[in-house]
Image (cartoon, rainbow, N blue to C red):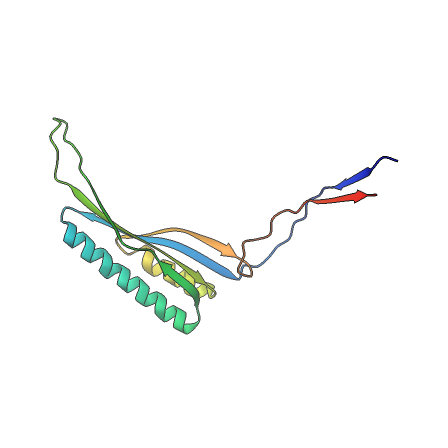
Length: 142
């Protein structure tokens, strides 16, 4: 007797309310003096992490992380081929997982207007995981 294979394929859709919003943002400053750019970026980063710490204590933020400070330089050339003075860049990335969406909205409103802060994007999560993906089932009759 030959094996019989039954394959079931289908799609399902569902609506799930998000339970968490994860915001990714960065402090990015540039200027001609390395020490000035670095100090300004670290001061701005300190203000953001202070606000995140307060939100975490209040229960609006589940967790947050910050990467190390990155400092790099670039040197442009004039049309005559002469090198210009270097420009220094400082970049610090942060992410925070909010459970209070009103506080997330306020946080975005406050910090997105701040010079040197770039809000990259917000990801929505349900139950600590991303929204469910499609599942394929295979049945085999014997």
